[in-house]
Length: 149
Length: 426
Image (cartoon, rainbow over all chains, first blue to last red; front, side, top):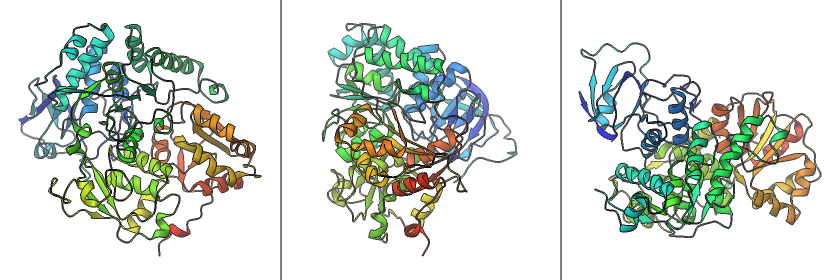
């Protein structure tokens, strides 16, 4: 169990997609497909839609929020976003998604050590209070672990 | 716990109408995210939410406009999703153009000034040192904070307009003096003057600094040349694309960094606990420059200039390079700029040789914000690190980064030619 800090509350269950590289959603995320498209990013070509995306913080374009809002409308947004700090961009996108469509996604900030313990492919369950349950016992990671530093 | 003023509370309760109440409700929730205990006044805003992406961005704009939203402070507008007068010359679909134009109209109805540019700091809406503002658009945020010394947080789309409608922002982050202190020292101990004088240097350095800075405010020490405003613009745009830089200090160059101590508001490392810093080498710069090129051949379909929007000074640099020459018939030569800059370039006569060269000009938008490039355009060349960073991902094109002169020579030759002498390994 990980105790995260609630930035935007909500529940979500899904498979983790973990990266240590920040991401700009504008120029980095195709809201028609839910795929990461930033050719400079180690997750380029990987689908994040419907998964719990763990990314330390947003970078780049201010339009990241608008891309995320479009993704919520299309049903291609990540199920939740886990970060290392209170990222205003991800929070704003979720808050406006609630205002516009009644469907916010959880945004949870983790301690760096907790963030670093996550790996791609593990199953996570996020509760409204920010606690994150991990499937136990932890399975052996299969396939590439998307951690680049 | 957020302490609201009487006026804030009145706005939240709908005293100024439903749009103001909606904007204030979003702002109050964001104040909690930022950990703010109060809101503060701004006297200017720049709205990045103008970029049309799809039905959600349009619905948000039209909801605010239909609720009677009006901006409370002088507000400029970023690029839109369409060149209203020129889109038919390109591959833009009529449905896209119509919806993007509706989104433009929605923000105009809120009383914002239709500047339609990502370089609002080069218009009459330029803020002044110390001014509290709420700006969206990553390059503009970085420029306003760093080069002008105005004060804005890194505001995202959809929040920038809420700040403009209420005239308020959370009193946190880069609005507050102590949070503007440098956090990471980046030294250039052995970068030769000749390289610093090169036309590509500041864009390449910005690309590198954006990646090195991570979440920190970088302080660049060791600049021995006097960069032009457009070189600092290129640096800011690059650093805010490869990274999340919203404020940088360049010792001896930017206004809050007359000295190293001033940039750090004290001894370097005293606040951040990071005294070491990093040295940037010539090899680091070469590697960063290589990253901005994804094309591997000489083929060239289009030269693209103007991200951020081309300025009058940049038109002035381009004019003598192209005078009396013609671009190769197979290569398009496109400049993205604002209506204001184009008009001023026309008035001063410097646009004439550029148009005679065969250049086209797109206004109000850019190739990244408007789906204007036809599919046969597969290879680009640019002197903009921002275009070079985003084009491969957003447009699925390959790109070569080079100097302004390289771009012109390549357009004439019809294939990529670069003078790499300064950048070659010793």
